[in-house]
Amino acid sequence: MNITAKAENGRAVISIKGQIAGWRDSEKNFTATVDSLIESGVKDAHLYINSPGGDCFEANEIVNVMKRFPGTVTGEGGALVASAATYIAIHCQSFTMPENGLFMIHQPSGIASGRKAEIKTYLDLLDKISQTYYDAYMARTTMPEKEFKEKWDAGDFWMNAKEAKEYGFATSIGGKTDITEDTASMIVKAGYNGPVSLTVAKQINNPKTPKQEMELNALLVQFGLSASMSEGQFIETISEWKRKAERVEMLEKKEEDRQNAEIEALLNQAILDRRITADVKEDWREMLVSNFESGKKMLAAMSPMKKPVVVKPLGNNSGADMKWEDIMNDPSACEKLMKEDPETYDRIFNEWVTKNRK
Image (cartoon, rainbow, N blue to C red):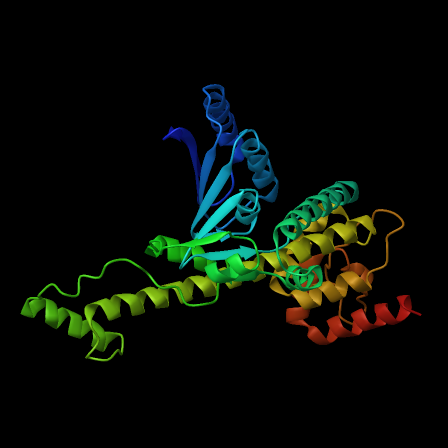
């Protein structure tokens, strides 16, 4: 996060750009600068935000610092004001969105790990910050609460500048802002699925040499594009392809994070239930990553242990003599048996399930 504060024309000018993170690294200097400005007689502040959001707790702390100004706090957005950044924006007495800007709100979220008590403490804290955000949005919006609650529960609520003003989150609409390739990438990574138009000037009026024309034509053929496409159109098409690829990458990363969180929760619960011991947690994690559904089924079928189990090596056990108890705490042995002798695996697993689920 790049957060700065300075005096300009008798007021404080504050800028927040990029991901809201690393507040602890910026807090001391930023807070000291704000206090110094206030002590020098500065009462009003103007805030610029171009951010995909970030840590909801850090955004709340930034708002608390902004509240120190005794005068009026106004604000304006860049191309993107999303997630936790919107919480900062709605605490300005007035907020202007650019004509081509995007505004997105959603519920605070997070991932917790650790012991049961630690996870519960985090969830309680997340409930409180979520309610704080909800109340702040409700105090600002012109939407009926039922309609807003539906948007809140549905997930990401994207608005253009006109909609942000209509719903009360912005007070005015300004002119267009610049959208560079980096800004477009930031918008896509924030989860926006609509088109993003760059405002970068295209040098399409400059005359080209015959060599440059040949190079452009060769690129159009290589990418299977129309030979009549201009250089500017070619650049915009490639940029759009890049943004789509980033969107796919972002969705894949979200799915990977979701599954990792589910795996962590399954393993923590299995340890709490004494289905497995902590020393084999990472082995089970590898099993779940490679074959999630099978590993999940195995964990669900296991009964809580009354005492620590010493895992017996497979040794030379034949398929006929092997029992599920021989491998139940050894994920690598389970996986090996599944691959090398699936019939035996199914037999001993089904025998064990039948015996323990009566």
